[in-house]
Image (cartoon, rainbow, N blue to C red; front, side, top):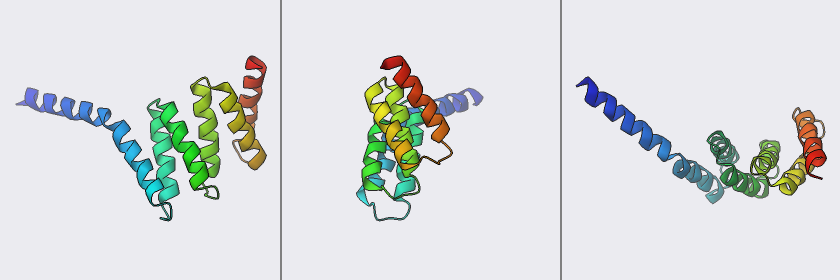
Length: 129
């Protein structure tokens, strides 16, 4: 009995992990389908963070870039822009990362992430330019 329970838990865990791309995309699609909902910007942010957590940087960057367009005045806008830059950096798309980091610094020069963004931007410019 214990062996069957262990196998069941193992199978459920595998199915759960395998479905992460599907349900994170669903969260993002739900946010963009009804952008007027008050929790839509937060849903997009959660989808971005979950995709980044599971190293799905290309998908996360696409969602972040779309969220920048859909929710430009959201309280999550700094997170969208920074995430787009970080994902591009992880994807080795240096020009894209530089663009988003510069955009972040132009819009939010006093943000608490500005120092980290400046360091990342200088590193990228120094190494790749």
